[in-house]
Image 1 (cartoon, helix red, strand yellow):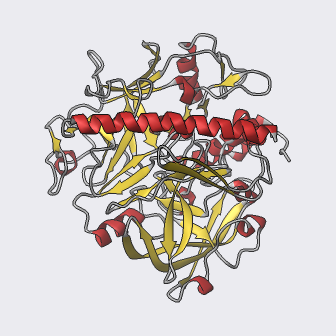
Image 2 (tube, rainbow, N blue to C red):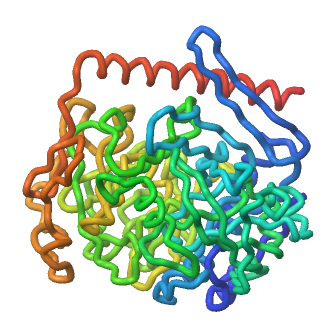
Image 3 (tube, rainbow, N blue to C red):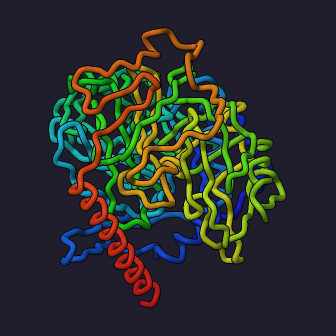
Length: 525
């Protein structure tokens, strides 16, 4: 049953009180889920024997549906509190994000220091499967580069959300140690709270002892989320141990980096992956262009040059943008989002927060970092039609972080992203399997292009970083060479790898067709 749409005024008032996770579900996505995913439908699996692949889709037994405006404003409110409080390191740094319905699983990855990234089938939430405790119980945890702390639902929790998820407790592990320390996270209309705990955790083939939150109470929002907790991947410590620091030490990484590839559900086969310690040359093409992190709070924040539509710059750059895998959409200060939509013909808004745009718009948005352009195609920044036949922009006017942009999965599923803790920088590259509509503007066989006469504030020396942070010397064990200008080059593609990329794209088209047929069949029956 749908929840009533909350007035924007009420949502705005929540902003000052909400802490961390506050997901936003736009109306178009609520309607899509309500039409395509019946509430009591169980597991689905699409397969194609001739191509030798399958798309497993698991699902929660029950969910609640929110309007698109509800989902987005929930995200915005939660995120505002997280970023504007200055990253104090507590559980208020938790975030987001995902009113999840289906689980579109990625195939198991048989590579050291790599793990599959699953998603919900709507590009709304991306999560990995970890194992906890002596018995290795499996949990889905949201990958959140905007959070420093981690938690899962505990076995003592009796709230409805906990009854719908996997929980963790003494019966699941002989090595679980509950600590005499509380944690609490406020989510606007509810709270997640419990005790801190210590046990072993395993991801990407690395096992280590880890301190995390064990929730004994969860808010109503989690009744619709497929993931069982949040895995903080920011650089700050949070209330518990920093996850990436602990994994890096246990895994003896060559470099303190992790790389993320997010899949688009409509592409078919889920090839989402997180890799620790090195880049994966098969996942990207051309160069990795880096921009230095400018936050002192442990956030993955870098300076944005500008955003353009159909070649027309919106003049909304020169400010920080937070790179956040735990956020579904793109948020910016209302005045900047208004300027951006002013260069999009036919865009209109009644509140400077949500914009309706022509459904037949075909042009990409171009985001520029360090003089390099990256495209977000119309299929990502424009929502499907709602029941009224209107389309909504997935760029929302809400100042999550003061004077800054927040770039979530709408942007990130179009690039290969490198989070480099050693040199405090974030890198982007063109996806190896991307078509002409996604990723960097360069084609598959060309490097990313630099905007003509770009005066990027991130090029050259950053006065906020010391020499060690600005070093571009390749670390030992690097699998790619790096030039002095901060661009990392991967080995040239061979004919074999090029053919492999074409085959992958073909499989994606087949999978998309199979998915479409399955959806139509489900609607008919």
